[in-house]
Structure formats: C-alpha cells, structure tokens
Image 1: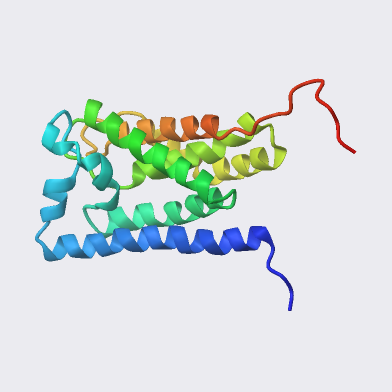
Image 2 (image 1 turned 180 degrees about the horizontal axis):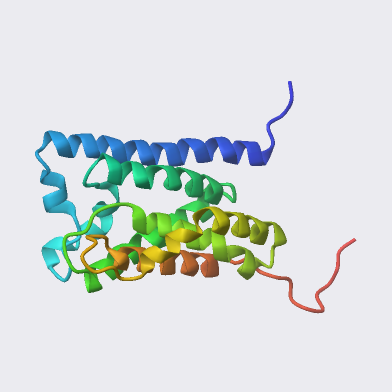
Amino acid sequence: MPSVTPLARRAQAGLVAVGGLVAAMWAVFVLNLLLGDLLVRTLGIAPRRLDGLDGVLFAPLLHGGVEHLAGNSLPLLVLGFLAFLEGARRFAVAVGTSWLASGLGTWLFGGGLTIGASGVVFGLFAYLITRGFYNRDWKQILLAAVLFAVYGSLLWGILPRLGSGISWQAHLFGALGGVLAAHLLKRKRPAPGGTDRV
C-alpha cells in the first residue's frame, strides 16, 4: 500500500479545515435566519462602539444573504486551501492576522455595521501574493502570478466606492494583515559564512 506524502496529508487536512470553516459560516447563516437576523444585529462590527468590538471576532462568520455568503465561500475555499498547503500553523497565522487586522481596521475606520468574510479573503489573497517575495521562492512567485491573473480584480475592492454598501476598510485592512502575515512567516535564511555540514 503506497505511503501518503506529507503534501498529500496537508492537502487532506486543508480540505477538512477550510471546508469546516465554510460549513460553519453556512450553519451560522441558517441560524441567523432562524433567529430573525439577531446575530447580524448584535455580533456585527459597529465601528468605534465598545458594544460593537466583539464583531471583530464574529463578523467574518456572518453574512447578509446567500449571494454575499456564496461570493465569499468559493475564494475562501481556494485561497485557504492553498495557504494550508504550507502547514496548519502558517495557515492559522495567515487567517488569524487577516481576521484581526480586518476587524480592528473596520472597527476603527469603518462607516457602519459590517459583516462578512471578505476581509479574510483579501488577507489570504495578499498573503499568497506576497509570501514568495519575502521567501525568494520562485514557485510561490509563480503561484502568485497565476492567482493575480485569476483574482487580481479583487484588489479594486480596497478602494472606497461611495454608496456601494461594501466595506473597503475591511478589504484594505484584511489585505494589510495578509502582507503582515507573509512578513511574520518569512523563512529564515542561513547566516552568510555559516558552517556547511557534509
């Protein structure tokens, strides 16, 4: 019986982890419907209000409709899976940094009640686009080029669009969180003049 490679194990774990996150978002969506939108009203990010600060933790799990949730689900599955291929710890740091940066930036600078996982999506996208340059890894840079070709139009979402009802602040700060994660997780390089082992 052929042995499972470490990459295949990470791929399987990534499917379970990211699929579980998306499934949780759909479960919360259904629960919110049953509760008459109570979760959105009480757990969204309410900028600059202490009672809206808990939204930093909960808002990415909440969505305003099927289209909103479906629009975040597919890119989260794809980008989350790709980020997980480097390992659970790196995935957790990338998601956590994007999640918190998006939420805190929105709480500080947002305009109204904010919900949705798009800040995390922007963070994972920025992480996957920039990590190859921090690591000087041509495979990661090549993947970044492919992702940019497919999802590059996402970046327009970090610009303000008046009257759109879309939180560009969540997108911008999520993306900055992704860049920060790439910096925090950059691979250490051996010191010049180090001893080689044979």
